[in-house]
Image 1 (cartoon, rainbow, N blue to C red):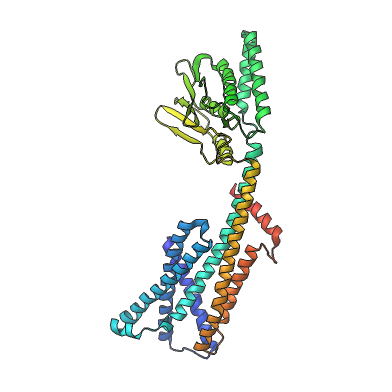
Image 2 (cartoon, rainbow, N blue to C red):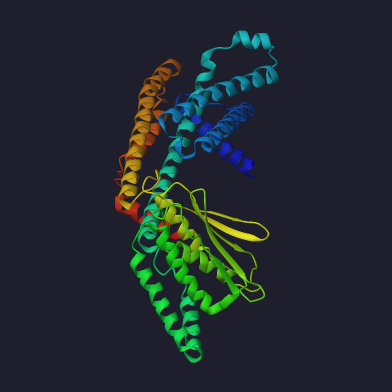
Length: 441
């Protein structure tokens, strides 16, 4: 289906080219009245158009897959242009063999001895112009998508940096804790007092740590013990919780409240009964902290949204190149979070992260400028080439068409690079970006 769609596009472009050439010839006094001759010329035109389009489409598709967003870097764009030139000339050569030898009955020797470089001019220039238009259109689409992604990254960073640690304790945990407290008040007032004290410490810790980027693993493990003491009051001996007595580096850092969230998920998704005890173990492994539990999933459980784990991953993404990993087998489920140190190369504070983003955007702008200057330089070189070919071929000024058309492409490229739009304005662009972000969300 995709191939048929591309063939359709090629056929449409070929028809458009045939129409433009026909208008140029008509204005130049060349009129073809023979219907068969006109049909033959149209068939030849479509053969060249479809073949050249598909050949370049294959090349462009492979280049886009290989370079992705880096295709407009100077070295990659140069490879793309050279590749298009080579594949276009080779395709024209093959097409001429098919038409001259296959259709017109020439021998290979006659064909090769009669070949001239001027036979390739028109087809090559048309193919080059069409390919240039394609790259211009793709560049515009790519830059618009990149702007949307940049805005989403900035918005996501701000959200993760300042709001990720808010409201991490599940409201159900609070409600369940209050229910446990109600029952303890009647059955065991002393335990109720102890429970209330522990619960207040849990929420005090949340308020104290939620604005911090990192906290020592020692403090986080202390909080995990405090949190699990509340859980154990609810489930009594149905939970077995094991943490390391000693840490290789107590000053190593983790994201605050990450352990609480992972422990809460383990309790929420598994059966916790005297007959099916939930075993949760926390231990160090090669510079990481591992949280592991046995799998005994509840028969009826609310489908997880994955927000909690995604939140942890986003916060670590802002701080380090090391990833949070999730693994499981038939019996156990475990999550590995990195233990960070002050010397961790990938560690970034909010300030350094923003600085790096500014540097990346400045670097990208320089690359865009280089791409525009290369594009403009090629245009300036090709303008006299078009004029020369026009003078050599006919008195009709057909060179104005590719020069003006390509000039519009240059103007569009310049407005994109220099962020100038005389018709829609910058405010429209910002509004459109926000609209697209809302739709994507």
